[in-house]
Image (cartoon, rainbow, N blue to C red; front, top):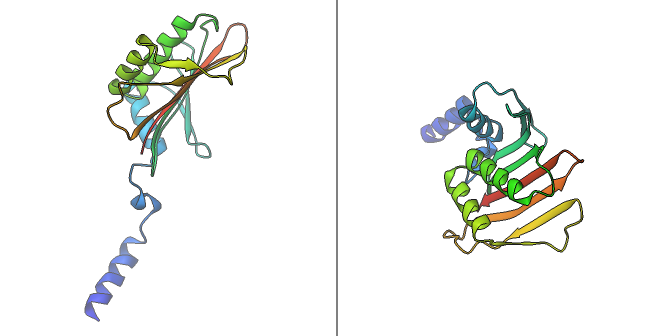
Length: 171
């Protein structure tokens, strides 16, 4: 009886466990994303959308960055940057993709994307259009089988803007 009371007392005192306690990874999307952005530039104005768990900010270059980091059963890095790079300039778009991944997903993923681009370990998807190029990653250098490199996409917004997006997740 005494043992049951102690367990009951701790339950009342500390409350029930949150859903995060059942998570394999950290699902504090807002906190994790804010930490990465603050490390990059502590003066950025950050807006978090709790519905889609994406943080939006404007970089000093004027580019708009949408970023989401975190997860419960799968830890995800999602990045989308709207840039004034010409949609036809694939080399510059690839360089900006590597820059985004390196700065916001971490050096390990940045190095991997560098290899993916340098070794042309991707192919243009059949689902691509004249204004949206979808590239399927075929990364042969992937050591851990629990890391999944999603597609990367270049999407023409207008004559002056292109959206660059990609995602990496771990099981």
